[in-house]
Length: 497
Image (tube, rainbow, N blue to C red; front, side):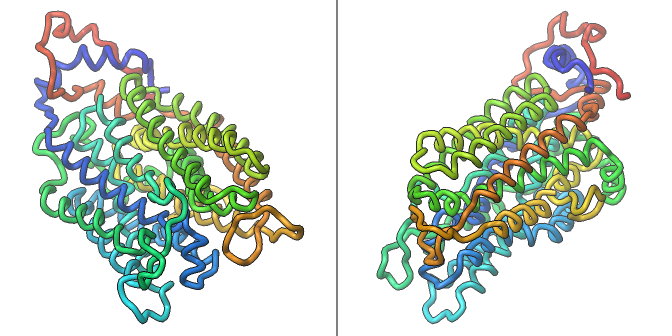
């Protein structure tokens, strides 16, 4: 451990005068930047999984297979593997402002392309437009998803970093509005009503976000850094930072375990309706479970983010959260194969979101802490892009690579039911048996959790650097008192081993 985390609030308060002498400052416009990134993250995540809750309806309307519909979600993971490397370089080299604006443009353009099959008649192959639009949105995601950690580090003081990271990360976790109300009707020539993922509604938030990014964002870094960590965050070059990351055992453990966990959650979100309909649960109930999954996840993230901002118990929070997530995942794998368990399933999905989503922003902060002074774009980004395939290796494969492998593996293990069932699935191909894939998903979740609990140990490098120098000032800082001026009594984090 980095040191007595419980002493951190007192240390930050007692050394606040040092920040005034060091000239650190937090600017109010940081909240505008966070708002733009949050809206962009929310729009992009909505576009990502807008097909998942209405997979049967879209497949039936456009004469597509369920596998093709799954690829509209899976393409995000596939495209992000190579493009994620470029996105990391853009964030750390070109700048957060330009990267955010570029991501907003790609997100808007992708939303337009994927809506063309419903806005224009006579399109012979709608799947090309659907997949093409999703691919542009996937390119935007690599810029969007790495941004909260860098924004928090560059613009926010240390007592707000985890909260800012939580807000940006949780906005990315919000899924399609279809999760809240079952399957909407399909609208193509006006015969079936409107409101599905391709009717153009999703273009509006994407376009608005692009306008906000263009009009409101002017600079990547504030004129004066808000903390010592912000001042030193780009002290290493991109390639030098990557070399340090691949040699950092704690960081690699975090990248593999947390990346695998996000891959599991991505697969769960994309396949939820298909898993539940096999045992007679309606699409409306699947939508309710998805909504509970998200809402309780946001609540958990808010609570944990505020707690970690105060205590700095990053490692303990993630280890406990992952263990509880594993228990909820095992419960879902078992109960989802039973019929008539609506109340239990709803409760399990709520707990799975509450424990699982809450660790995401804390893990992003921990990635920066254990890898400082590597740039935040690389540190947070490689948690999503760096990972394993046939063992640990420092190459460009964590979230995206493991997400692709996990989702492909889960879908490949499904088999058709040989006997009559109570299925409510509407793909016309017969219900699938998801027992083996769900047990595998639970097993992988337990495996990643155990590996992280047993193998992850790290000092908090950024907090140590800030404690040894001068923490950031706050906009509402109280006047210094005689006790606060006695800096010799301020407890500091223990030195790095």
